Image 1 (tube, rainbow, N blue to C red):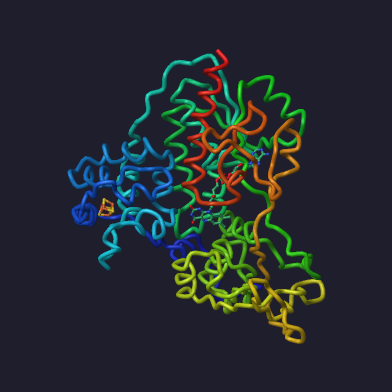
Image 2 (cartoon, rainbow, N blue to C red; image 1 turned 90 degrees about the vertical axis):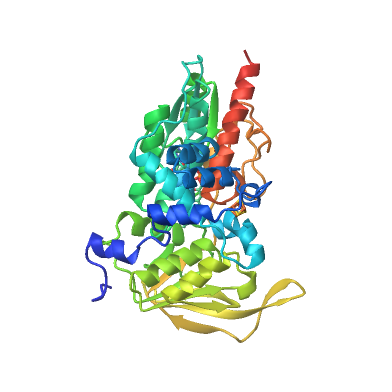
Length: 443
Ligand SMILES: Cc1cc2nc3c(=O)[nH]c(=O)nc-3n(C[C@H](O)[C@H](O)[C@H](O)COP(=O)(O)OP(=O)(O)OC[C@H]3O[C@@H](n4cnc5c(N)ncnc54)[C@H](O)[C@@H]3O)c2cc1C
Ligand code: SF4
């Protein structure tokens, strides 16, 4: 499948995936921060799931107090640097900025956030006071954004925190999922290390918690457990031919690109099935890596796509072509993928219908399925009294993160079904406060 224009070196990969939000220079940061109107009841802060005091950190940058700016950010959001890079700021803080109401470009809040936090990470600044051991230990399952954020907040209340992580690296999907032109692997890992060094949690890697014995051991050794396990593998679409070679789930495909970019030359003609942000990312990454044709096919109309409009626009610029109102019915080919058979669809009285006799085949040599991720229900069945809803999301008290088994708390994708890094970070932090309140009452 290798093509002449496939990238062959790490340098070429870095150029293909150059950051879409590059680090500001001092002059840029000074100029940009000077534009802030320091609004009362700042809409940017209200729109931030982590409630960062945006005008305050922008003013600190403008005054040259970068350490203070980074501290303001980190006291609200442990993943301040990652979020500055990967947050969909266009629909959060920047989308709410008052300038947008005046048809003026909003403040570049994400990049200002990166500017301050990057400086703090490189200088190994310390922002958190860690008290002595309070006598209780908490286990965290999963070293993704939710687990890391929960662990940091628990450490500031004096708990010993051990994180059990199935993979050999922290950061979860911020490392394995988020597009490389938003954040590099090194950047994602550096922030976790910056936090670990100053707050002092322990991570046990390659340690998947999977059966009743693992759960019993945790219950024996820890006063409470936080579930930050995220979601599972890509969902099947349940059509004929899905098991053919070169038909792959989007999260698995993106993980390969992020961990083995050179070993994995992208196909010539790619079909991506789905209309969410993951579908857009997979398509965009294929186009950037040199696929000759990348068609994103969604079974509903363009305006019904769940993906952010600005992400779809960026994908089109990268060369992705959208096709709408077409549902896959079969992956065709002998043992490997040769194409996809589709049927045309329409929405009638709010219901999606297929149009008889409208089937057609598009040739391709790679199919990427991006129609959602499974939930980790099998693992969760090992926890007595824990309830999930009909779609497999863990049920929690939204004010504390406590599950229906009082010793277990949860947050992030496993609870919200798949949102953003900033939601997982905010939910992990809230659950840590819930754990602290619960364990304090047991004294
Ligand atoms: C392709 C893709 C692109 C994305 N792009 C963006 C983006 O641009 N911006 C953005 O803000 N968000 C993005 N997201 C969403 C974001 O990455 C997630 O919302 C966020 O990472 C969720 O954090 P989490 O901690 O809940 O779960 P995860 O990040 O999934 O972390 C869960 C961790 O738990 C570990 N684990 C799971 N089960 C076990 C077990 N049984 N035992 C031990 N460890 C376990 C996993 O290995 C993983 O490290 C994207 C997601 C995907 C799939
Ligand atoms: S809304 Fe915009 S101008 Fe107002 S405080 Fe926030 S960033 Fe500054």
